[in-house]
Structures are given as C-alpha cells and as structure tokens.
Image (cartoon, rainbow, N blue to C red; front, side, top):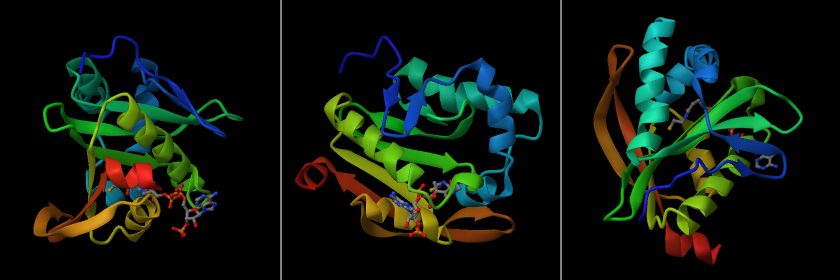
Length: 186
Ligand SMILES: CC(C)(COP(=O)(O)OP(=O)(O)OC[C@H]1O[C@@H](n2cnc3c(N)ncnc32)[C@H](O)[C@@H]1OP(=O)(O)O)[C@@H](O)C(=O)NCCC(=O)NCCS
C-alpha cells in the first residue's frame, strides 16, 4: 500500500481520535507513569521528560513516519484533554497484519470508551490499511484487556509461557487475533 500522506484523524459517536504531536509530551509522560497503565502494559513509565521524548518519537511518531504503524490520541468530544491512546504497530504490509495496542486513563475505565475507539480503528485498518490479521499480545493477569478484545471478536490462539519478565517475575502472554473475514461477518 502507498504510504499515507496526511494523518487520518477519526471521529466516533463520543470520541475524537487524533494525531499526537510534541504538545502531547506531558500527557505521554503522566499517562504512561500511571501505575495501572504500567501494570497493564508491563512497561515501566518514562523516568524523565527526556526519556518520554525519546519514547514518544520511537513509539508514537516513528511508526507513522516509517509507515510501520499508527497511534491515535483519544479525546472525549465534550472535553479537551487526551484520555488515552490506541493504534497499530509492527505493521507488515506484505502479510497484511499488525499488532494492536491501547491504554486508557483509569478514571475512564468501565464506560465502553476503548471498545468504541478500537471498533473505529479496526474498521479503518481493514478499509484503508488493508489489514487481514490484527494481533493482541496480553499479559495473562490483564483480564480487563482480554475481555475487551473478546468483546470485539478476537479469538484466543495460545499462550506464550513466561515470555515477559516484569516486576521480578516471569509472566505468560496470551495471544489473541482478529481476522478480516470474522470482522466483516459481525
Ligand atoms: C485495557 C483497557 C483499555 C480496558 O479498559 P475498559 O474500560 O475495560 O474498556 P472499555 O473502555 O471498552 O470499557 C468496557 C467496560 O465498560 C463496560 N461498559 C459500559 N458501557 C459500555 C458500552 N457502552 N460499551 C461497551 N462496554 C461498556 C463494559 O461492560 C466493560 O466492563 P467489564 O469488562 O467489566 O464488563 C484498560 O484497562 C487499560 O487501559 N489498561 C491499562 C493499559 C493496558 O492494559 N493496555 C493493554 C495492554 S495489552
């Protein structure tokens, strides 16, 4: 697929999904240091704004610039601040597959916000990125995240035993995937 020229800002019933810029660096730093986000993603928060800046370039701007993924900032339509992020990474254009990632401010959990955001970006990924397979790798303790992808029709494919090491212990990772044919059938 030809690389996208303009970042695809999206809109749902209650959300704006928008491009993130350097102005969102402080949000990035605070958000990814929230204990619930650190535990859910099994990824330590950036220890300084400088480290946050480097991560922001690598995980948010880099994939867009290099055409290997897309990450949207999530905003409630009736508010002005970001409340989370979601998107795709490790986009393999030949095999038409990518990994999905997402994280929401805990103050906004339990309202269906991420379900709405992911529904929109999955539709986008199938129509515009031509994805055939979307994979989610989830820590086996992260039941909320597993409920989320199952609600969206992802199928559990297997367990990678002791694949991660976090907080002094090995963790199993659970692999879920959604195929285009299953999404279209829904
Ligand atoms: C994973 C994560 C985004 C899930 O958040 P969430 O709030 O549970 O997901 P949603 O916003 O889609 O909300 C769904 C919940 O709201 C409820 N809900 C209320 N109204 C709803 C609606 N209109 N539509 C769907 N669900 C609704 C659902 O029942 C569900 O709760 P349940 O799982 O207890 O049944 C969040 O826990 C998170 O950011 N965790 C930290 C980071 C992380 O783990 N990232 C993923 C790494 S793999």
